[in-house]
Image (tube, rainbow, N blue to C red; front, side, top):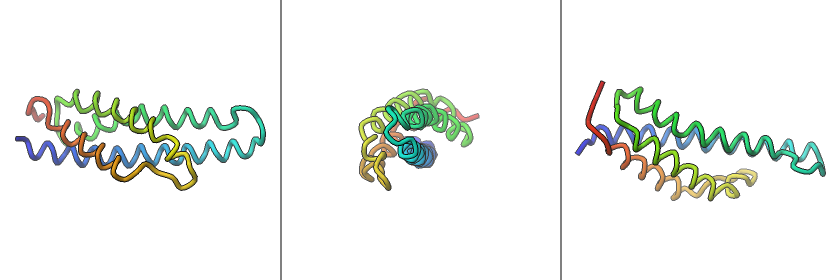
Length: 129
């Protein structure tokens, strides 16, 4: 078993999860503030909401790849692809929880995502640069 690779994966996934969750939270706050400022305008804050969501979904696979690459681990395609798709599913399902003022995803869901990513980090060849 590749314990060091799993540890690096856990650190990478936890950091990327915190960053993308914070990005969504800040973006959704921006969307709520923009919507409140525009009053009764239809779709007020929709652009900001979509921008925050798409940015989070785009940055997760990039952060997973960059984190593992920085720690000199290669062969991370499974982590990047499955981890990115899992983030789309998890964050999409819990969008309403994040979109509340002061809201966030349930801690157990975040922990489960980090554990999934930690397991996925060990998948692949044991090749170091």
